Length: 286
Figure 1 (cartoon, rainbow, N blue to C red):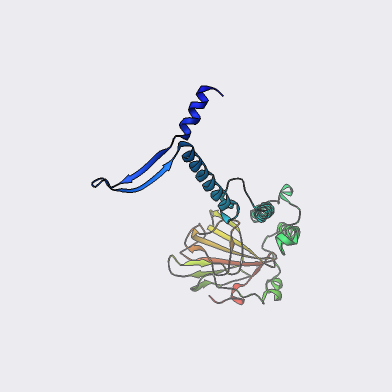
Figure 2: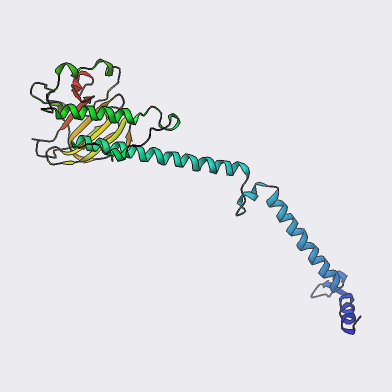
């Protein structure tokens, strides 16, 4: 053994006394004999014990979930499920957007674009939505409108019995200034109400049109179940965007006087069933 190593071991084994005494009276209060080696062993043991306690705290308590990179099996399964659900929702949104675009084309008198068509949604995701059937009905309606006068409709078809089970909500409480008149080709009711009054959705549905036209101003349209469509014209402000789902009674616009074909602030309200105009007064009270 070298001389240097012997000196180091000797220094580590040197005994020292740690004394605590009163500074004024020099009375000894506490004393402890120790060596550098004992002090080193005590500090090392304390550090190892503290490290063990901290590791045990993380491994055997819920705190382990906060460790970066750690995930329990349940969390992994939940993440995988959320990823699949998000992917399914993206497909739903994409196909609904395609449907809304085709509806807008139909309302503008254009042919729906076939490249927007998407495969039918699964029942677990789409519920009762049958996009293919909707597209077929819209195409049939457009062909009928193009045969001649777009308003040359059969007056007998404007009273469908199978929508009488719906509970319609009046879109605006006010005074009817012009009623539904089939012979005069006025396929709506005009309702006057207080300025800044909210226009409300008559049934649950999805906004398929929300835009400005020179003749009718701010117009908003809603696709309802069972091939029903409601149209609200001459609004001052539109409160909903295309693709938004609304419930019956939700505010969708503010009554106004927009567009060229208006003589004052009022709501021009139309109700259509499978391409035929329906008299709104037969199903709701204004």
